[in-house]
Amino acid sequence: MADRFRELERPQAGRPKDIVLMATVSSFESLRFPSKSDLRQFGELFQPLYIASSDEARRQAVAALSRCPQIPEETALFIARQPIAIAAIFLMGAKTLNDATIKHILRIAGPEHARAIGRRDNLSPAIIEALVGTHQQHASRRTGKDRDAALEEAARLDREEKMRDELRALVRAATPAVEAPIRVFPASEIHQSLFVRFARTGDVGMIAVTLADALSSSQWLSERILLDVSGRQLAETLLALRVPEADSLFVLSTLYPHLADGGADTLLASLDAAEAVRRIESWQRADSYTNGDGLPAAANTDDMEVKGLDNHGKSSQTGRQRPAV
Image (cartoon, rainbow, N blue to C red):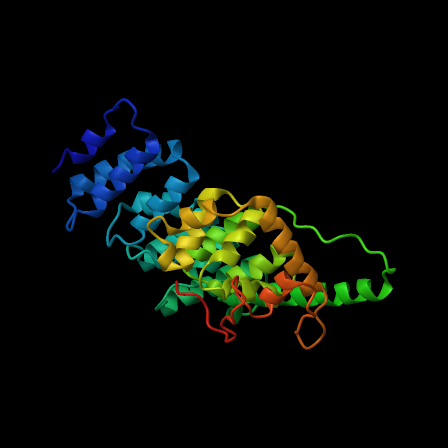
């Protein structure tokens, strides 16, 4: 048992670092009561494998370690200093982090990492006080209530969405009869990262906000896309936004459990990219016709789908139910 990590460290032909990293983490995760020697060997092996691996392997490894009741302290601090897109899930839910380690992380981490820590369950009074002090350092005029990062970010994006709606209304009022055609532009790297991050945490509301921003549309449209429980509308949207296939498969299989085990691959393979772009642009046109009460004017049959009809012309769900996560 003591040498199991050293066995993984030995080079093997055709064995990428990603596989070695995940095998090392899985082997450590299987130890119910790791000895001091196990912790030491894992700590020595983890960092160089992590540095040599891809971002996706890093995210998976960190997510797995967040479930472990005990990991080496130096490994915990190393993970806490990683970019927030990788470290967030560890900072929000790692069982191994005690108050002393969290205080150390708050002293060396930035505001995004502090906000992730603020979303942990059952924060002790000492950590809450440390969070308030950290927020005062980064923004002296913010109160302790602003430590809830998800609510703060959602409120900010909601304000931006309202401003965009107002600007679009002003532009429509001042634009001549001939307008530039609506187009779908590829999602930025930030949007792609947020899709994966919020899918991983099960935050469908924030996915809707991010999707609306990527489409330059109202949140009403993005929520209607997510309400298609078959997952097809979201798959078409991700394809039209040119989200990398691996990220699209992860988001689809996470939001719609019935698409796991190959279902998402089959769905994406059945779609045509050019047709997906055409359909999303028609949805954007319908959304641009939306008046103040939130009901779009029917532009064509594709636009009617967004109003509540599925791909077969049958009435789809009209409630506010969200897909399972």
